[in-house]
Image (cartoon, rainbow, N blue to C red; front, top):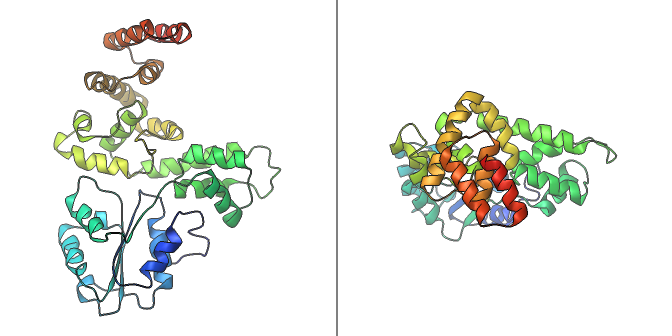
Length: 320
């Protein structure tokens, strides 16, 4: 869990969390989607702590710091052990976890930290420019903005983009290098996802924000919908509104495959229409992606009847 001095540059409130966790006992929790820097924060705490206990949390000596990464992946008995240790006031317990809205075990652990919690947020263009100057090279505001847009501000994707930049500011094609590197990072994220998670992520591209009720209509086992939604929401491929990051669409559809995509898009259209989630933008996008359904055409035509002349023409074209 070694950390470089620049690992947390640009990560909002991370330095303060590390100072607090390394100087006070009790429970401290860092929550963030995959690739947001959870492990980097733990690494910084480990570097700053006086005594890190490497064994089981159940036998941690008084005064020790205990670090637990990926708490959301632990079996029930380990979570129970951690919950019991969280009541101790003589040790420092630092947990890192992905958000798990539908897992009460993890929600309780997060709540046990009270105010001693760091929620990792996407890097904005200012933070990206600061990080670029520290770990790569100074970049322009426009390039920082482009990186923020293509990565969604996800730390691991931002770092992939910065690593792809040439050493010279005169590089004529920085955006091409950034785009290719971010796409490859998205593929690495997606390779470990299941078909159900990919289906929910694809739906998020078309206005169906991950939710158990809609996910249950897209996944293989409706009983698993809450788990799939939690996994999709912590994938690092969704923005703050729950929509798929635009640059992730290409790698996602490649991973799903053309034939399966056609089937999923048809089903997503049906679910969106029945759930009242379909809007003009999503409907146009679905039509552009080759979905042919009478209800989609009717929706687009209806939207065209109630909008401006310019927009109506585009909607009527999509309907046909």
